[in-house]
Image 1: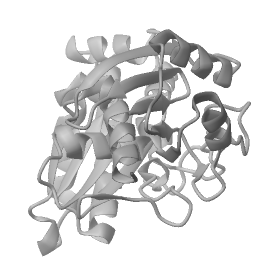
Image 2: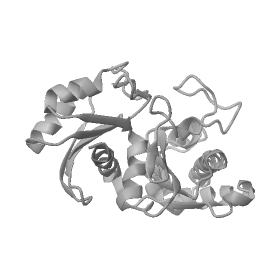
Image 3: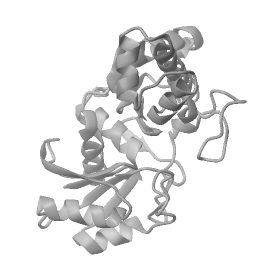
Image 4: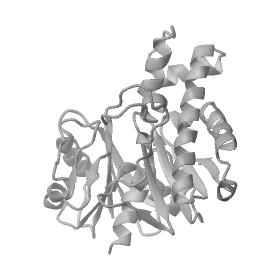
Length: 289
């Protein structure tokens, strides 16, 4: 099965077999012409005949129309991705949100195995999420269910690219972490440097990650309360900082997850790293044939 993972900064493709083995994969920057980048990655993989294609794409998406309008890819608005990929590959195409595919991949062969009701969350350039309920992805009406990056955690907070204010993404995503720290005197360039500063004892950097973890934790608690979850699996570049993020996430759950049915709620780091979306996209395609 051909699996495709499309984000604001990179596009990855891979071949995944029915046992959940990633046989080969390739990645290109998304760039200013995303479909050209996608075509180049498919060509690099030398994809032959495949039974189907699974695509995880940054959202919003519309699974009914087969179109995508990713916030972080401004050149794609109502872009007919499903039809274009069908033309390119000549096989049936299944589409889901990128974070839905991360959740599905982790549920299939990663940290979410055995969960009955889980949230998969990606904390990176943006924040995405996806739900796997009773072993199946829950997409909602248009494919955007589980989009926890836009759960409001600061009602009077900063404007968000979605048009709202105070979304978790405005606090916890990598670029917002860095922006918040820089406005308070930290002089570094990116989230990786910010993490190094926090580990070295810089108070501003440490507070940036505390705020991020609290926002992620609040989004998880809100989603778990609505959907009665047993697990949240968190991945993405910011999540790779480990305890810098997960300590305040778990502290927030301890403080706010007070309902009796949330006492069993666990938060775990993702296991599959940057390939989780490929596994999930493949699983999506396998589930529909």
